[in-house]
Length: 376
Image (cartoon, rainbow, N blue to C red):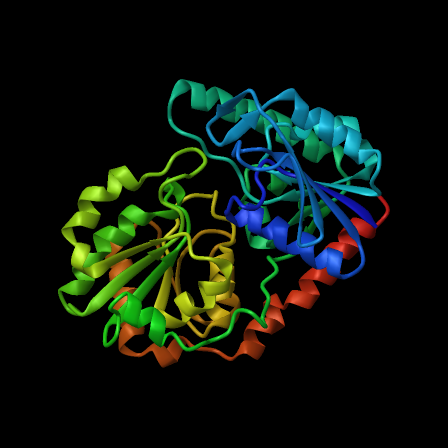
């Protein structure tokens, strides 16, 4: 098939949505399909067109930003023009242009719904959010098929709950050959982690990740386990919609001897990071967190998890038993779960076969290709 992916952000921007799309696009190319991505030129230094791992990428300029959204007519015009050359068009939501694109592209289009949208509390944010949901609802009403991660999330989603009969459930692609337990001695030496208990976090520094509550749990852990170090991997400076690093800087400063900020970790180095951690924490607090691809990466590297009890985000732990699910916005629960796993980590470590049974790469790729191939 000739497949067109349409989304606001793509590699080198890193988020759960962009990584989901990048990985499935590259795997579809390996299976013999032709994939083109139309996305925004979120960084003016990026080329307007390039090929990344055999995926053709076309970037469009924008006139202004609304929160994380990039608004400009060239995005819609380019997507519609490219759609004419392709057999299937895969729209990735949240995307403000979803309604108009679905209307213009029509039956060729399949929607991948990654998560609901939650903006700030200001009046402008509220207006933009309402307009987005009108657009997204229109797109979902017009499409015959929707791809999303889990039924658990679909049933709880503000919009998807009305379209469960259209949904195909396909979890993110994780390369089991790449994500495996590796020697992390050099990583530990570099960051002075040898002999320490290591608690990891992987993700952008944004509100929905619940970082405030993880930081508030740190003194509760250190009181009993003072040799614990908290290692944060992920972008904390240049984040679409704004980073919350400045809001957290005082708390980080209070425990700077027990905190390591890594910034973005290269894909090639992620197995080393996960392997160095005794436990990974996903303290998310908002429906914007629909799954958490880092959970699967961590599992394949043999590192158990702590995830909050959010629809979708709780599924990896519930399916595999490789960790603990805790209430959201509860630093005491985070601290207790961390201490429990650090004391007896082996209770939560499961085999790779258990993980692959539910979240295998080949199964996800086959299911995605099938969902795109089906007649609309």
